[in-house]
Length: 212
Image (cartoon, rainbow, N blue to C red; front, side, top):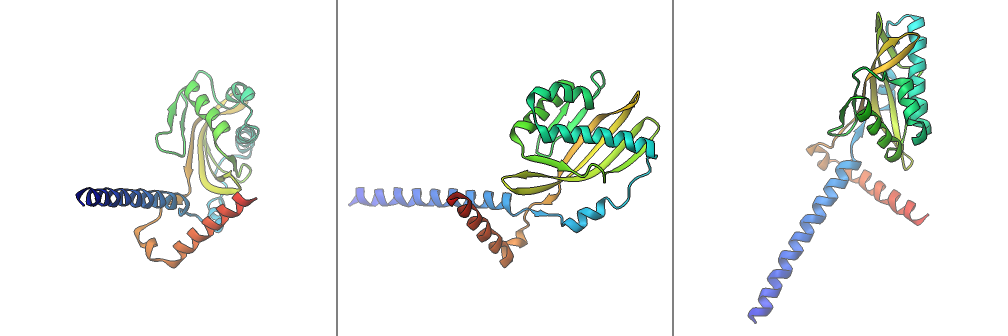
């Protein structure tokens, strides 16, 4: 009798632990998938003003942006060294802020390593090269743009900004910043029916992809 009671208590504790773990996992996954992204209309308004850079500066900076974009489109590890030489100065201090926590890297080698990881592990990153806002003062230019990372047919919007300096006829990146354009779920979202509808759609989408 005592053994049976002890077994039931152990099973009850295990059930509570499993339910707690399942609830935590569900909440964590929900938090990842229920982030609210800025609307496309709002993101379009970000770039309505073009900045104060003279046309000649804008042309040079846009060429550097396009080279940066091309590297992220091709994502060829064999071209990483030539990409770094093309868009970053080799002997100057450079800094890159990634979109995720802890992604603060400084120096040519560290930046190259993070970009290489992006190419192998990230989704397809694209940003509005030609519509980017470009400001300048002398041999310094700074830009702001919007883009998205497509992973498994889902676009995750982000903001993209950078500081460049003139080196001869070229503009090279001194600082790069990726930032997700989203907010995490709020406590009040739990009370909204739309939150649960989104979860249901996510689950159905997952099962439909699994069945394909």
